[in-house]
Image (cartoon, rainbow, N blue to C red):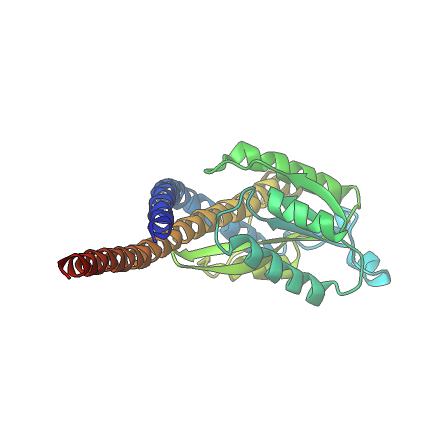
Length: 303
């Protein structure tokens, strides 16, 4: 009985230490979540304005023929199967609850629906997704690891520069960004947005993401030329799309981590309560046994 009591006492002590760790990790995740949310609020206005400008350019037909001029014409696309690429954003670490598994599961379903058995390639942002698709034998043509807890714009520029270069070289014909959209601290939803080419589908995808764009009644007067305007606006649009997706995904990651650590702490509390009840009962039983033995011994001596 003594050994059993010691075992239970040891489990209580170790579980309390685990609870201290999960409590600390929850606080860290909460701090990161608060920090990135403040950063996201200030960025959202800029992203909204860039998307609004591109939508207005589309309404004014300035984007017409854009893909033909870039070498990805509609005629070319109709003559062959489109080669799709998927920029999938996951975390580099574990202990984030179901965050990574949700992204990968939903992305796989989207890929299966969109590409089927056709050739496609994965562009992975985050080590978890990269490792998963490499083990599965998929074509991981690009990976980026070590995204900051609060990503900087310069980090994303490296990613955008690489993927647009791959697109311009004809390594793929279309690119989708797949990530978890932060709704609130307890809920996130999967999103797959078309990034390249900037066609009707991509414009419609951008327009559906909570962007308010006023109807445009007049055409643009463009100076010095439409091409020079697009050369400035479209790279900013691509950067804002990917940066916004990574910020959104990181926000969901921190929220999921905070929720997972809180759940772990709550489970530890339940286990400690159960173990303490078990310990008290075992201790009470041991004391009762000792009293019974002493009483029995005294009765034996009295006779």
